[in-house]
Image (cartoon, rainbow, N blue to C red; front, side, top):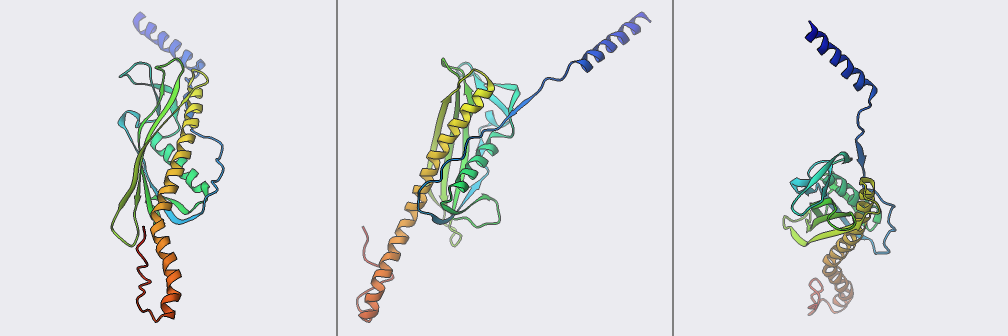
Length: 238
């Protein structure tokens, strides 16, 4: 009987303590930054498509990962990303590309729009590094840009590149890590947008040059009765 009463008393005390003490709060974080200025670039009449990014298994969850020693990785339990980092980074870059206004459209894959170029991404690392004097936010993203014309089954890789960016945290706390990560992702986005624009623009240059020669030589062909002038092919271009 005494044993039963003792157990009941302990359960009662434990229950009261749990009712009075609030549960530990879990904080969720989102990478964000102020909108970037639209680049003063010539618009390109193409559609970009972005597939869901993949991510290394060590970071394939919502917990913020940190490293205090070489070869070791740990993660916060009460400080987490609001969603899987692969989805969060993809959505941020999608929004930035759409906001640039230099493409006819930027869409998700799969989607209801036919795309001309496909963007694939893989996150190798997204973490807090405590190895140095200061905490640092680190992101390592691999991007592959592929030409995928709707009129052909031929796919052409325009480039594959690793974007490694880091930013020093102002304080040694998770909120400062997220702020630094936001700065790193913004710099990554700026570099990526320049690379994609240049690759797509340069990929379309031969077609533009051919169109120029067609327009220039067509009047000559008509005047000369198309003798000796093949305006469809144009001259040999360097």
